Image (cartoon, one colour):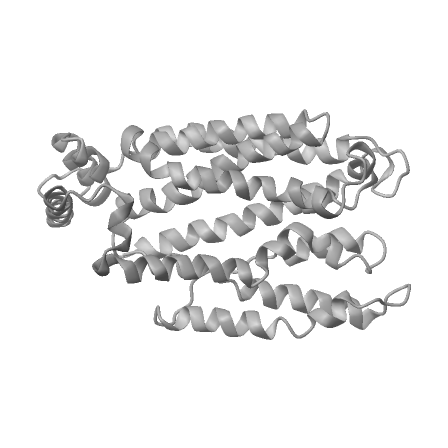
Length: 349
């Protein structure tokens, strides 16, 4: 969304939405994500993790179609709600699926890689929006056509198709299979994942024993409602997860993601959108430090990145000076290295 906000194509077609109207358009996707995240566990338990991810991919494609074909703000909002519903499902189920099929030695790195891939997707989409902004005379052309925003919105369907068809080549979750009493299939999947096809491999037997014990405990405790989230033995973990998610938003990451072009509006020419692309430069989300030190590292880096911000958003002379441009670049690079999303991978057991 952010990459098209500065184009005349978007402003002219949607009647230059500002203030609450633009805020409503932007917030419609997180609203859909909330509903999707709340419904993800029911879908994943009923249809399997793999099938649920494929469902999310289909919903994402539908949302991209609605956004691309939007003839006004109303349809655009509907398309973003639908796409957000998909994001809520995928962002909740994908880490669970990864954790259930990955060897425990690399489980944290696999989930961190998924978080890293998200920022790479954002970066690539920003450059696609930057290239599309030159359609029909460029972003400052008075009568720029709608291709400037329809092209990047349509390209969103491509990763949805890749995800949908790519999931056919991945196995069902052995834990889900076991929960449905499909024990033989679960053991076969574990053998292919961890034992080279040998069902008697020590790692396969150890993983199967862990799954059996976990399922036995869940059935004995009959843990199947949201009430379990406030029980003393799990409440601290729930609060930890909620606080990490909360601070990952309150650090300002999403504001910069959705409105980075607005915060850099004083940078002249096409550096405006290029600056938005630089903002989404991505770094690995894991460091060779102990798990408890990683969030401290990210928090310190994010705090350091705030110092150039007042200089970025203050009114600047035209054309802006070289220091202003370089300072903005440094801010965005440092800020991306200070992300909190990386801590989501290790607080999950």
